[in-house]
Amino acid sequence: MQALLSYDQSPPLAAPFRFFLSAPVFGILAGLLLLWSGADLFSSRWTPGVLALTHLITVGFMLQIMLGALVQILPVVAGANMSRPLLVLGAVHAAICLGTLFLVAAFLSFLPYWFTAAAIFLGAGVTVFIALAAHALFGIPSTSPTISGLKFALVGLAVTVGLGVALSLSFGWSLNLPLLQLADIHLGWGFVAWGTVLLAAVAYVVVPMFQLTPAYPGWFGRGFPLSALALVLIWTLADFVMPGFVATLSSVSVVAVVALFAAVTLNIQRRSKRTRFDATQHLWRGAMCSALAACAVWLLALAVPVVGEWPGWPLLCGVLLLFGGFVSVIVGMLYKIVPFLIWLHLQNQGQGIMMAPNMKKIIDDQAMSRQMLAHFVSCALLLLAVFWPDWFVCPAGLALIVAYGWLLRNLLAAMSVYRGHQHKIAAVIATQQTPPSL
Amino acid sequence: MTQAKADMVVDARNMEPPDPFVHTMEALDAIKPGQKVLLLLGREPFPLYRALELNGFSWQTEHLPDGSVEVLMWHKTQ
Image (cartoon, rainbow over all chains, first blue to last red; front, side, top):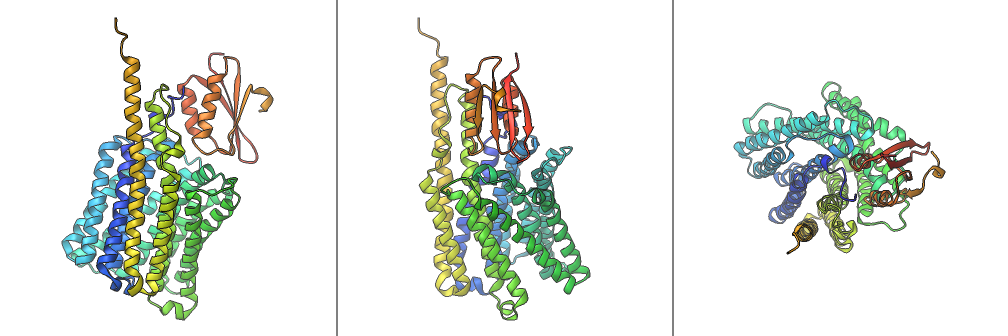
C-alpha cells in the first residue's frame, strides 16, 4: 500500500527541479559580478551593476524557484494540474534563463537590443507560465487562503513583469516613460503584490506543517492577500494621481503589509512545538527579522531627513529585504521541498517493494546548517559593503559564490541520492520479475 | 467523532511530513476489514484522500474548533 500515493496529481520531478537546479547558478553569477564590478557598484541604487545584481537575484534566483515551487504546489494544494508540464515548462525555463542573461547584459552594456531581447524572452516566458497556471486554476473555487493567495500573487506577477517589460522596452526604444517612478512601482509590485503575497499563501500551509507551529490566525488568512494587493494598487494610483501626502501614506501602508506578515510569522514560529530549530526554521526566523529591519530602514528614511538623504539607504533596505529576507526564506523552503519531492517520487517508484530512504537523510543536516551559515555570512558582508564598499565588496562577492555554490552542491547531492536509489529500485524489481530457472 | 470508535489512533499533530502519511498507511496496513483507523492532524490532509481512494478506503473528516481535524478511515468493502 505504501506505493500508492497521490502520484497522479504530482508533476514529473524534472518539472520543478530544472528551475531549482539552475537558480543557484544565477546566485554564483551575482557573486562574480560583485568581484568584477568592485566598490563602485555600491555608489547608488541606480548603477548598472546594482541593477544587474538585483535582477540576477530577483529573476535568475527567486523567480525561478518560485515558479518551480508553484508547479509543484498548484496540483497538491489546489488540485490544479498543468497540462504537458515537461514540454511547456522546459520552454518557459529556457526563456527565463536566457532572458535573465540578456537583461544583465543590457544593464551592463546599455545596448538597446539586449533590452529588447530581455523583454521578449522574459515577457514571453512569464506570460506562458501565467497562462498555464491560470488555465489550471480556472474554475477552482477559492476555498482556502492559499488558493486565493496564489491567484492574487499571479496578478501581482503579471503586473510586475508587465512593468518590467515596459521599462526594458523604454530603454531599448527610447520611449518617453517616467522611468524612476515606474521603477519604484515595478519594485513595489514585485516585492509585495507578487513576492510577499505568494510567500504568505505558501507559508499558510508550509509553516505550520513543517515547523510544527500553530496555524496562522484566521483573520490573516482571510484578509492578507486581497488587502496586500489592494494597498499596492491604491499606492500605485495615488503615486500617479495624488503625489504627496496621500501617496506617501499609501506607501507606508504597503510597507506595513510586509512588516505585518513578518511579525505574524515570527509570532507563530515562537510557539513551535519543536524543541530544537532546524536550518529551515533558522532561515525563516532570520528572514522575518531581516524583513522587519528593512521596513524599519524604509520608515527611518522617510521620517529622518539625515537618513533619507544618505544614498546608501535604498541599498541597505534592498540587501535586508532581498538577500536577508526573500533568499533566506527560499533556501529554507528548498530544504523541505526538495527532500520531500525526492521521497515522494522514490516511494512511488518503489511500488511497495522497496521503501524510499528516510527524508531526513536526503540532504545531510550538517550540510544544510553550514550552507545556512555561509548564506548569513554573505548577507552580513553585503550589509557591511553598503557602508564600506572598498573593504567589503570583494569579500561579499566571494561569500555569495560560496553560499550559492554550496546550495547547488546540496541540491545535487539530493539528486545523487535520488539517482542511486532509482538504480537500487530497478535492480530489486528486475530480480523479482526474473522467472525462476528450470 | 470519538477515539472510542477507532481500533487504532495515529496522533500526527506533532509530526512533520511525510511521517503522518507513513504512519497512517502503516496503520491501515495493519487493520482488518471492519476495523477503523483515526488520524489526528493539525490540517486537512488533501493528498491523503487521493491515496485512500486509490487504495480502496472510505473516510470521514471532522473539523474541530481548535482548527485540527480528525479523519476516520476504514476498508470500503465492509
